[in-house]
Length: 195
Figure 1 (cartoon, helix red, strand yellow):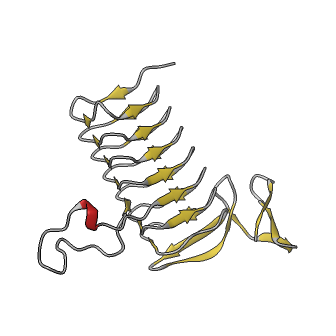
Figure 2: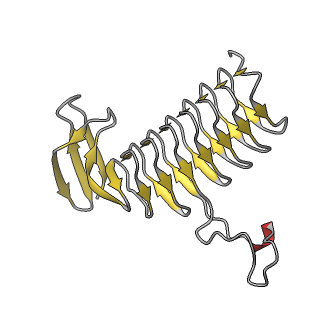
Figure 3: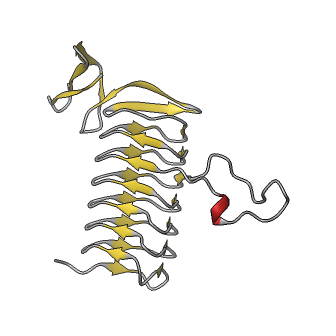
């Protein structure tokens, strides 16, 4: 297996695990206990917090912030300037006025399923799952789950249709007993998904 490339300006914890053939570019910061799979690319100035899990063949563009307890499955694309948050009630201080500590934090997780794409400049709030091969449009604020093969965008992001594995918007579909059958006119793929 090919060795990983880590740019000399990147700060990668010795307690992070990096898969083979992964490229970590200029000024990236990868924290302790982060797990990054094989054949990944982390663009310039990307921040990967502790305990983040990233699968194989993931592409994360420049200036992304991926905070702890985020889980990114295989084949996910994350556009530039995406922020994956982990606190719905952010405060620097407790009610007493004292600085908050880790014990005061109610951390939420984010799961990005296999093959999904997150458009540039999007913000993903905690306790969100984005389904397989879903597509989030650029500049979106995702405040609720997005099911598999759905396209969503806006602030807050709303589902506006279906998308194929190839990335094309699907306009031909039919619903049958709890499932939806999607027909891609571009790649001729037929997909059965949950409705």
